[in-house]
Length: 527
Ligand code: ACM
Image 1 (cartoon, rainbow, N blue to C red):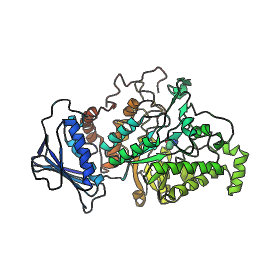
Image 2 (cartoon, helix red, strand yellow; image 1 turned 180 degrees about the vertical axis):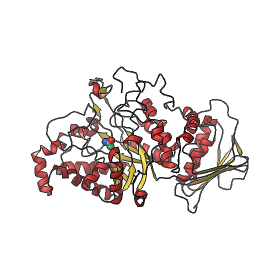
Image 3 (cartoon, helix red, strand yellow; image 1 turned 60 degrees about the vertical axis):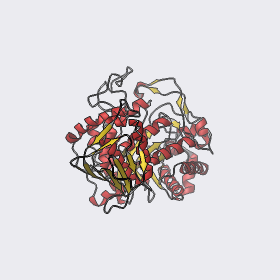
Image 4 (cartoon, rainbow, N blue to C red; image 1 turned 45 degrees about the horizontal axis):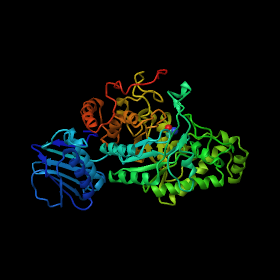
């Protein structure tokens, strides 16, 4: 089972599930029961009855109950399978949901299919008792939909696969230099212009080739509302990211008055960091807060990510207007502009009772009180986590060398083109979210961790699954399971788990290396 539960013990005999089985639930347990019933019915072709909590204690009953459990975390659950059936009890519907994810892994992998591949008459469940709860509250998967647009159907699929592994945050990187992917009613050109680019680099960008093919797409507000609701049903919070004030060339291409030069720009057709950042004049700051207001209307969750990474100050330093703006704001120079801007955005977010999240660059100017910091720069991870935590920020760990799943699996020419080598599954598994050397009294500030999929080199859903899996399985265990973990113990379990990934139809990378269909398909220099 992945992620490994905190405690698990085999009992003697278990139970049998068969056509006509009952799922008994009431109150808040009913939504979880409905989802489980739908999943089991699809996989088996059985009729799964749903009943109240006092369903008779007969053969093959699954009882789900939300009730307070002393000294267990909010997402914990207790699962027991014995001769009387299967009982899952949790203090919240979320905990109950995780219990049902565990139950799905106790059943044969064939029951993860969307329809029966062969007749399923009955299924034996071994006697087992599991006490489980996550180590961290923030267990995230990030997807960059800006560098390549991914259809809504893939986002829903990712939610299924992430929640199957007990992850609970989907961080959507919605905007960047190369594309704007969210409908904003007040600024229609963001998607009329900003969602489309003329072409993209072909192969690795150091090859300086282009594909000559337009690329783009965006989510409507209804698409995003559907994604949010689908995620909520699976206890995933969607964290939207609007990256600002850098990584904004698609917005400047849509509305040149947001930029520093007045010259028209196109949506970027190159990877890397664009120097074309927002000016921070009053109308531009209003634009940013208008965008965040619409974003907060779409995404009901408690967090709004405003990026804040990699913002070059070159244009500000060369701009007479930026110099006058600094003077008017009483700032010594261009390097202080971003910190001022971040504080403005934090007020917009706080006015709606939400917390701002940003990449660790925002610590340089002193991040706004109450903001959450995503620590990504590997070489400064301990320093930034320590500094952020000691100033009272919650920290989400996302250090490159363990969690950037856009890196290749191996420094091997058989691997598809990737931004750089290499994070093996073993390396991903060795990730310890609490950075070594963090003072123990600050550990509680590390609220979790997430993996990143930047998509410069990930043009298709098929390839996205390859880059995520099975590294997401490793990440899931780092954020859910107890701290003491060993690759030698995990590796055989992962081997068994691939039968589940097969049944789910995941295009994962086999542990021994890419299949011929997954290996690199175009000529170009090796990594
Ligand atoms: C980042 O990788 N620029 C957060």
